[in-house]
Length: 253
Ligand SMILES: [Fe+2]
Image 1 (cartoon, rainbow, N blue to C red):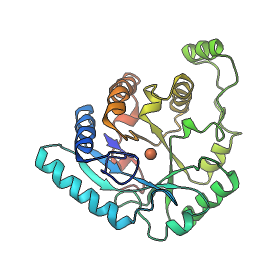
Image 2: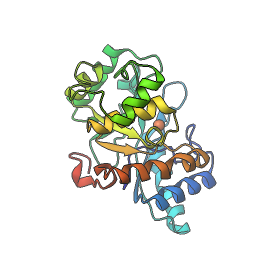
Image 3: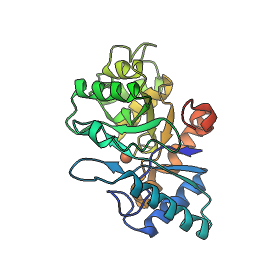
Image 4: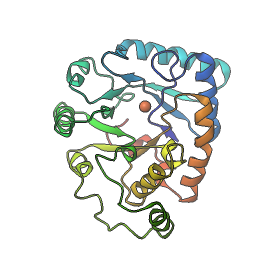
C-alpha cells in the first residue's frame, strides 16, 4: 500500500517531534502493510515556510535511518500546500509528490471557494494534478445529508439515503470537474474524527470518489488508535484503495 499523506519527517511542522516519533510512525505503517510513504509537511505562510530542498534532505536522512533500523518503507518527498492567497508564490519552487505531477493540497481554515478554484486552475494550467486532502472533513465543499443523529445512523446502516448523483450539485463536484483528485484520510475512515466524518467518508467510498488514501499521520499515539481499524474496514469492503499501485494512478509515478 501507498500512504499519500504523512507528517512523518521530524521537527518540520506539527507532525513527528523527533526521530523516535518518526520511527514509531514508520513501524506502525510498515506493520499495517504500507511499503511507500509520501512525506508531506505543511507549507503554510507565517507558520511552516519550509523550502523544498529542506524536505528533500530530511526525507533522504530519514530514509537512511529507516534502512539502518530495518523499517521497510520507501520514502518520497512532498508537501501539503495550503490553497490560500499565498499559494502561487509559495509554489514557485514546487515540490509535487515524489517524481510525479500530483500535488497534495489542503484548504485554508477560512475557505474562499473562488480562491480555491483559482488555485486549482493555476495548478492544472501549469501541468499539475491537485490531490485534495481529506475532503470528507470539509462540509463546505460537500455537506453531509441533513438529518438527526438517529436518522443518520439508520441511513448509515441501510446505506440507502444517497442517490447516484448525491454529490453532483456540490462545490466538490466543480473541483473534481476541474481535475482535482481526492485523498481520503484513514483517521476519518477509522472514526478518529467522530461519527459524522466517518459516515461522510463511507459515503465518499460508496460513490467511489477517492483516488487514494493517506494516514495524515502526525504522532504515533493517534495513528495507533485508527490505523488498523481503518485498514481492516477497507479490506472488509475489498476496497481497491488497499491494492492501488503507482501504475493505477495516472501521472503519479
Ligand atoms: Fe496533513
